[in-house]
Length: 80
Image 1: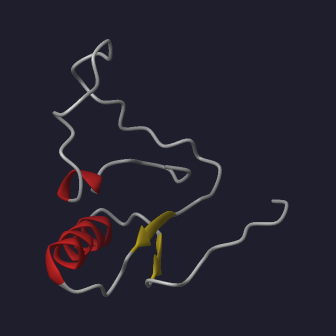
Image 2: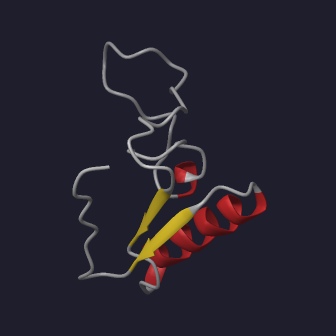
Image 3: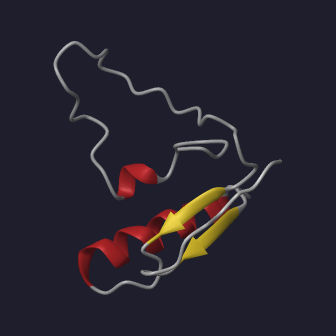
């Protein structure tokens, strides 16, 4: 993730499932290329949409800035 943290994505993807050769504990630091996390598939229906809602609720509770993107939307960062 290009934002500040990976915390919250465990509601979408299971952090205990790793490929062979990787250490057991995930690294929760994001790359920090942008100052916010991106909530992809925001507003989607079904299990994926519910998982993103949980992620966004977690980010809100932790004061993590985020940008919600609905299906079909993109984020373009040009320069800084």
